[in-house]
Length: 374
Image (tube, rainbow, N blue to C red; front, side):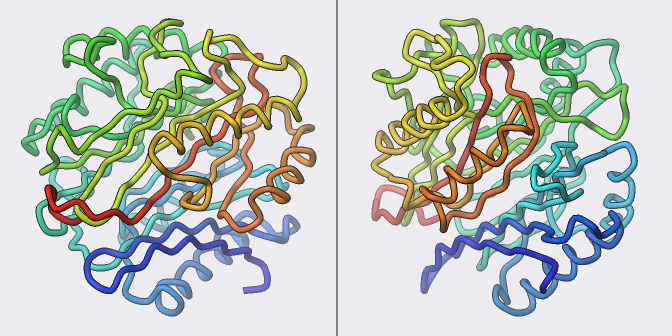
């Protein structure tokens, strides 16, 4: 469609599960919000009945510019026909439009929504469990984060899973991150200790970033991904000690990255990564170009530790604190990564001095007879 830009990553196999990541963006910012959503959804429908016929969505995230006035419309459109775990977050697309979408699709899987709201994607020996949009209206960000994690622990337990062994990735969105992130960190640290997630064991790959719910009383919102049927030795954690320090050294509890080996592929989850060194210090304060280059170097080092490169990356989510940096950063990304699906979003990082952050997922074919295929 002329009004939509669609970028697609394909990981296709003859037998087993094929994977796709698509970033859909509106190209005409003059359209009304409803018109932009209509164009986006029509393009998505064309995609799944045409170019990606046979693929089903397993996770979908909409990025909107004004959640208070826009989220309910999207939720209403999906109320009766939601085809996957659905996340909606206010992180304005930086191209001046009102809505963009990242969707993760697969072929060769069976899907259903479980009673507790978890979206199950099943194939062979594994059940992939997606949770989106968890939130509440407790008194402050610390209490909200604590309730979200405690509820999620119970949801996993109902599915025969637990946080430490089965959860691979979380995304935590914080309203007014400069003020409310400290409460999120405190609650997460304390809940993790109760779940045997410590600096002596491991944490979970995560992005903690600014993001707003449609309800102003919601200060924290979380999406999460877990896998049932996985063995402990299939999960590996990425550290890149030449470039990054362990997060617990500055009081937070997440892994820089995680990769999971299946019989037929390696999936890599890179957490939100900024311009930081292995002492936990911000590199190149105030210089968006140098911060972007250092961020790339950090992410590349993490990927290399998983025996991957940017050639294996499925999508890029790029977060900027200052919209005035968009043109510079976009041009840099277009030169280096012209063919990777990506979207640029306004979302301040958890430390004010970080001007830019990015996250990604990657997939690489491997053959490991110790484990069942994905």
